[in-house]
Amino acid sequence: MNIFAKAGQAIRRFVAYDSPVSQTVLTVWGVFVTAVCAWLFLLPQLAFELLVGWQSTHLALWLGTLSLITVGPMLRGLLTASTAILAEKGYPSHLARGFFDAIRKAPRALWALWAISFPVGLFVAYDVALAAGSAARMVPAIVLGVLMALLLAAAGVLAQPSWSVVELVTASLTAMARRVWLPLTWLFLLAICLLLTRIPLLGPTVALFVPALWGLGVALVNGMWRFGR
Image 1 (cartoon, rainbow, N blue to C red):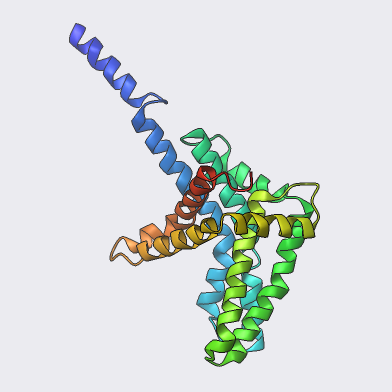
Image 2: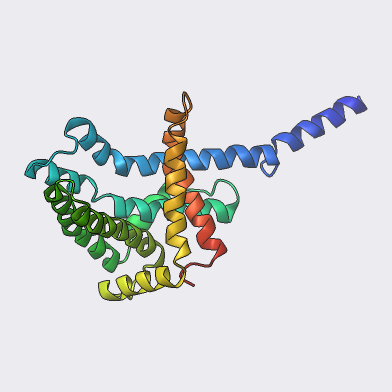
């Protein structure tokens, strides 16, 4: 009887909420939920790639840029949820709600920056299309596009309700310039995540988790270097 009692206690400890196994399962579930929420905002881009694709036409350029307008809100929700997962060391309650609340309750300056990203993206798209393979024109346009994406990521983390758009952009650029290795690390982590999707057989499964894995990596390095603090 004593043996069965000890076995029961061992099983209860094994499946307890705070056990390593349970925490691991909850963390994986949290990553999955975050990834699904992020993919909801990436569906317009996926639909564009499948239905239209990159073409040097006015319609394709406008539709392609419109499909990217959800990236800014996605970054805000993704990094907020990823930070919550790391802070809770597992699956925080109402993770999906926190993801969407971070977007819904975003400061007005951040919403304005998301709107500004559309004409900037359209300018980059037309510049690349008109470059016709000329590196002298394509490289500056691509650099501007990457800088805008990094700015959206930084602003999603740093935005304060009292800031204007100018203050938000200035604070974001200043924070990235002070720790320039951080935005470079964000790009490096993205490259690693995209490379993981190229693994034979496992690639499609990994692709589902790529947004959340990238968000966790960015949240981790931001917390280590106290980005924006």
